[in-house]
Length: 360
Image (cartoon, rainbow, N blue to C red; front, side):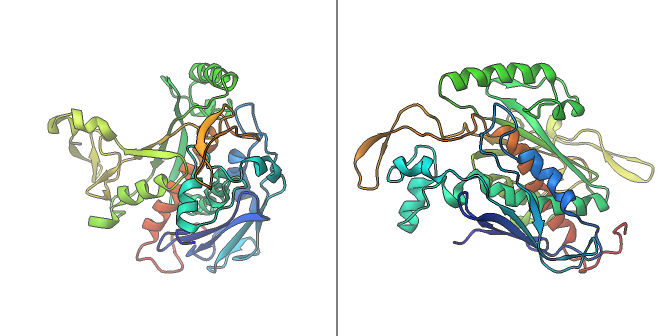
């Protein structure tokens, strides 16, 4: 299957299915000499891991990562880094009663029409479990970016009708919804409980901010940095829209309002505002990169829905099993890691295999 390789300079391929033996990733292009351990990666996988609250699937996966290659005596060797995450809690029988039916809102129909065959056990490659491999690879990218003083952090901006109105970064780790606003997290929790009672689900928005970005990353025309970020984030299952900076609000503003005026300070160019979201003309302008990913509601809901089967007959489907009532909290770290992969790729463009700026 095409479409499982991402990046040019910092290149990643992912493999595995939701109900197969394992998922994993191979990272190629990471410079030699960078300190890297399984714990460096595990802390990000733990944020995505299922079964941590009443608002996530009860699938109980430890998601323990194994580094199979590319690291020697605690440092990267400059060769491909192979990462493995074994599947240990598959309940494939949960899907046996719907194996011939197409689930509304899922990739089932599209996969079947394209390949004439599909893995009905959780959707195979279209399952959200594939994002675990992205997070493992993205953790390596985040470690590399840290060597250059670049940080990437994402959080839940909204769930359903509830949007944050304050920002306390420490609060993100204190509630299961990864919202930096305690009151909003409580309101969103109540909203999700209503959805669960109604056998329904919810969508939401993840916001991601990258700081310490130097000006000059990205390329003109087709390889614009914002185009690459949008491509990467849109590749996450359930994302239906991506905004950079002010996003769709720019359509309502005037040029005098939207332009980021410049000034000199301490021998450097600065911006008075950041409507551009840190990217102008497809190239980073020195400001913080700000993007938002809009997630649709989880398509797996337990209430009856009309559909068709593989024979072309109308039927009704009731989806059983263990599913997230909202994707957003577990997707926060996925957006963070996919953004990091793009920035790392842009940072390494034109660089040698060994980067002297690494603090090693």
